[in-house]
Amino acid sequence: TTGESPPPPAEGEDAPGEGGTENSQESQEDYPNQEITFIVPYSAGGGYDILARAAAPIISRHLPGQPPVVVKNVTGAGGQIGVTEMYRSKPDGYTMATLSGGSVIPQIVGQAQYDMHKMEWIGTLSLDYYVTAASLNSGIKSLEDILAKGEVTGGLTGLSTLDGVGSVIMAETMGYKLVPISHDGSQEATLAAIRGDVDLITYPFNVLLDLILDGELTPLWVSSP
Image 1 (tube, rainbow, N blue to C red):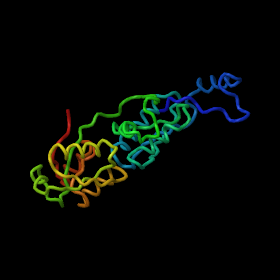
Image 2 (image 1 turned 135 degrees about the vertical axis):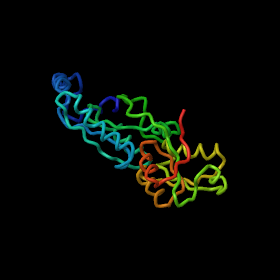
Image 3 (image 1 turned 120 degrees about the vertical axis):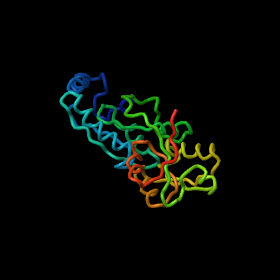
Image 4 (image 1 turned 90 degrees about the vertical axis):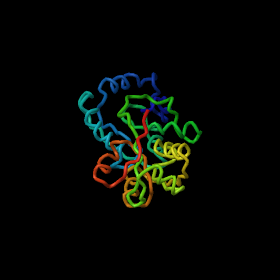
């Protein structure tokens, strides 16, 4: 949720502390009194979306009056569009978003339209171990197979995301050439791997586990501390 100061009042409206104080206090006292929007900056069906939809009813249950918490998928630019929409929303407690660790990367390189220092942080939804898996069509079963190919394609959510940055770092560290192919979300990238459109994907354990157990992807390694 954004911690920015509210925008200046429109003409004819009371500025905070100029006659609107009583209404403001009443609004705070009966919060929440309307639907809360929970923005997921990635497509439906992916790991962040699944976590948000699991958390939404729990958040509602622990708020006064149990207001509806509705998940809204806002995709694009590796998650930046959704985070930016939350950041620019009215700071009234009715809009929040789930961010990945990769959300800090655009700000580090000066491409973000938001400032993470000006957000109010609520909590952590998960701590993820990432798994790299290969498409069955690729014939890859080990790092040695990748090195033998020399060049492989990698499905990722964007170069500014954790799976994107992680994939690039792994390729450089392990000595193979990665051709990154961006998708709108982890679900699309995963489907691309299952179809054989890309050779590798790297996503959280919970996203890939069932597909690995069902034999639809070949597990290669786990990235963890």
